Length: 503
Image 1: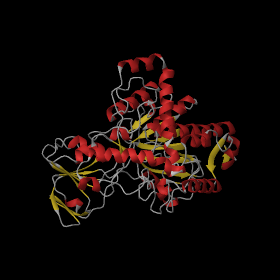
Image 2: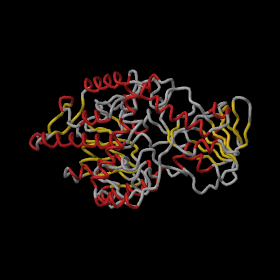
Image 3: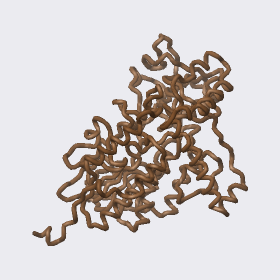
Image 4: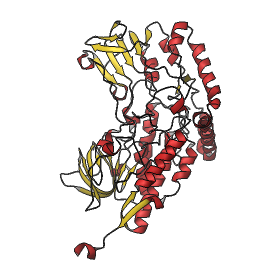
């Protein structure tokens, strides 16, 4: 797909530049059009919309939130073929939404942002991309936390002579039939990849650091009657969405309030494990020793059968090194290997985009966040005027649909833009005091949660052990917090009139 916006060697002036075109970027683009803001551009490094659902095409890729909840509230899809959607269906949905709300003509594809620098004198963001330069009054980063793959630092990995691929950068040209495959990781992508490739691979060795808690996946095809009812009576689908949301919010009681409420979920997961894994030795290997919810709860009906298959093996010794045609574990065992699959996640607490955005004093977001990511409401950072973040720090969720949080943030940013327009502001910037207060709020609500005291380490926590990823409470409270712009937590400067500029 190509952009309808012409790019050139000259700098293009725009009112708003949005970085990224996944759920967050598309939601922001649609919000801008809704508010009557037409002078905007969406800078997307890929060749199409979709974000993580465009990039993650590995075998078995699917969502672990029900379709009726994992979609925009303003764009329900009555024709989901399954209760839990697979990657191609979500990708097609996002492409359809982009076309339906007519925001494709504001996209520039192949435009990876290499630098964004605030010009304090001009009150503009200078944005350099691989498709040309842009100058924007407002910059919205919707790059997302699941955008840039994390590659493991394992001795000898660069010497491997076979095929190496990250789950988020799948090589569909490579045939795994008969291959001796090593899968590194046991997270959300691994439990989908392994069942999909195990039947065709010669062997699969799963290198596990920490076993996940896994519960059954209640997935099924939707019926023609269901789809017909949703089309004819949208209120029914809305009610189903509400029920799914309420059911998932119940998990917050156990995760953030009192861990006793997690006992039924942990019992469900343990029963699922015991029923599907009969071998006592394997069962012991894959039984977690931490409270459920401390790490992301995974859903699958075929993970345990796949790792129990005769051609599969779970390896827990830890990898010592990788050689040109094998993986060697710390117990000295060398396993011949043809293909390495890196199911090792993403850069979440060290967002790559943060290294490319420099604020008023010339420091990047990454430099400002060296001691931990801080924001006001996950959306604004002191020292970075007219910059707004979507899916930023402490906006993530481990129990429900991220789209709900995205819609809350998009509306919040929309209100900030409206305030700028109504007040004739050249800049709008949150205060250090506001983000310090918000950091304290996050820290206070994180105390006693399963993420800090559940007995595990996870990508939810940064290198200092702080929760900088998850919103540690009910998501409807985050929506309440972002329902209006906390104008008292922002400072602004007014636009200079022509006479003032001339003077």
